[in-house]
Structures are given as C-alpha cells and as structure tokens.
Image (cartoon, rainbow, N blue to C red; front, side, top):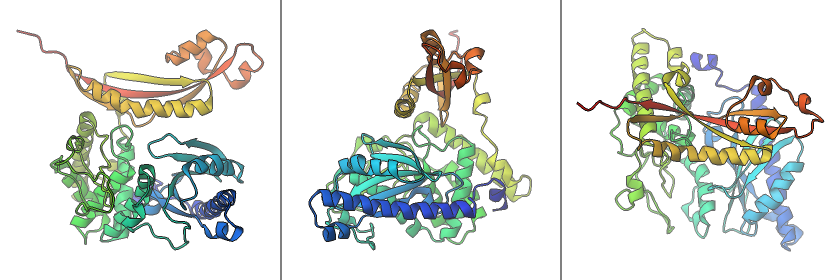
Length: 438
C-alpha cells in the first residue's frame, strides 16, 4: 500500500469532494432532462415531475479503484417515453449550457452510444438506457433481470456496464482486499502498456474480473498474497478455458449468452473472461495471437518479480517499472490519422484507433513476422502549416524542424495557413530472418 501511495494512485480529498458535487449536479440535470422531454410529449406538470430519471455509476469509480483524473462512467436511466434521439438532441445541448462544462462530444452511432464531457475538470462518459417503465423511482435497482424485457440491444448493452460492476462487488469475498489488489494490477498493467481493450489487450472490467477470480480462490488472503497468486495463476492459466466468477445463467430474453458450444465466434475467443451479469458476454473478444503472447510474457515477468519480493530480493517498485516498447523492436509501423478540425479529428482518430486491431490481425498472417505489438495509445499533435505542401508532409509524418517549432501566432493573418491535427499510432514488429534454403 505504501508503494501504491508513492506511485500516486489515490486521488486527493478535494478531488473526491469535487466528484461528489459534480455527480449531484448531474443527477439533477438528468431529472430536468426527463421533465423537459415529458412536458414536450404532452404529460402534465405532475406526471412530468414524477417521471424521475436516475444516474448509476459503473467502471473504476463504482468499483472504488479510480485515481486522479480518471473518468466517471455514468449511466442515465430514463422512462419509456424518453428516446435515444432525445439523449443527443435535448440532453447534449443541456450539458453544453450547464455551468463548468467543457468538451462535450456525442457519438450516437457508437456500438454503445455515448456522450463524453468534462464538468469542473472531471471527465464523464454518459450512456443512456431507456426502461419499459413510465417513471423511474429514486430507489430503483438494476439487479432484476426482468428490467431487460422489451429493451433494444443498445439499452441492454448500456445497462450491462452497471449490472456487471455491481455483480463483481457482490461476488468478491472481501471488497477492500479486492480494491487494493485491483489498484495494484491496474497500475502494473498501465505501466507495462497492456491496459487497453480497443487495442486487443484487456480493459478495466476484464482486469477487475481476473482479480475478483483470484480473490474468490483465496477468500482469506491479504492484498499482497492475492497479487502474487494473480501472476502465478494467470501465467499458467490454460486458455481458452474461460475465467468465470459464477456459472453462466439463462434469463428472460431472446439474446445471445456466451456459449462456445453453440457459437463458432465464441469458440474463437483466445482469452475468454466472462461477465457475471445476465446476459453473460465475453469482455475480451478483442485479444489477438500477438497481444495474448505479450500479456503471457508480462504475467511471467510479474510472477518472477513477485517471487523475489517475497524472499526479500526485490521491492514492489520493480513490478511497476515502465515498459520498454520504444526500445524493444528494430522495426515499427507508424499509422497517422490527420484532419483539419478538432471536432472531426476526435471522431477520425477514434475510428482509426478502433481499426488498429484489425491491422494487427492481418499482420499476424505475414510470413516471417512473429509478433505485431500495438502500443496502447496514440500521440496527438497540432501543426501550424503555411501551405498545402506542408499539410501533405505533416499527414505523411514528415514534420520538419520549421513546422515543429512554429507557434499559432506565427501563422496568424497568413494567407493559405492552416492547422493540422494529427494522432500517430505505433505497432512494433518482431521479424524473424527467413531461413536460407540449403
């Protein structure tokens, strides 16, 4: 725990208070949003007020393992007469006008539709679920599977985040030991650059489920023992045997529940970690052959370090040493996403990032390429260009010293000058020389 404090994984009391104040304001704003839409639909003032609306947090904040500056995943639950279009057409503009709000960006076409924003400096991701109820009471619980009846798939997916988080907390034998252990594993995975669902590694909920499983296997262990067992067990785990926190259950819906006997797609999952709330899904379907090899190697290194810590030959700080991605490979593939406006770039770079995994999977079929290692985040840059030729060069990744050193004021009032927003992604390539034919 001392090492975690040294590594600055806990937020200050002031930031904790700010989060609570912001969530209070958000709860009121969601009720106001539901009331506004209810009145527009012709409900009386009394009925509009009674329609309610409630927020649920999930992810790292709900699990109690968030650090300084991490976002709050927030689900807005609304009654049946409020539509998803209202979420983007009414709630998003209300957010833009609220005090202390910056950077509002809605992505209605996402797999799980989302609005990303910052309120008083706290990043918040909003999802919405519309229940088949005429009003949302303040004491609503999402535990009942029957609430999922008559909902569209996007609402079921949106509800899933909150239901899974609550179920994980219910299924661990000791919540505090789980939290301390998970903070440790999250920091380790971040430092080793293997914390990223979109790039084919594991995301927050998958790491939480792995730690929860070790806690279940050793219900009386303290956090240090859970962490050391974590590495030993995960290194030796016989994938694709799934990690389950409880048996997979059937429920009231005609929806797919993870079942490799039934679905060929589920059989192809390399490291299946299965969510405990109905309908059970695989949280790790993005893992590729390369990312599995990289994570297995990291489990092995972690196990070796923890062994040394136990016999006093190493300190915990060695577990959290930074990755060496940019020194590890002789060859790197550079992918640059560039555009001319910040709003467009946010969407475009996100689209490119979501396709990196597909590229990695195609690279894995290349002869003599033994590994394609995607880095977990892109590097953003704004370049100030004086001509179309410079814009083309920046888009190709050729940024001269003149462009790199130029400031915004250097291009003010210059004809033909423009901004280029770019994000660069890297994939490390391990290449084996072809064997000479004898």
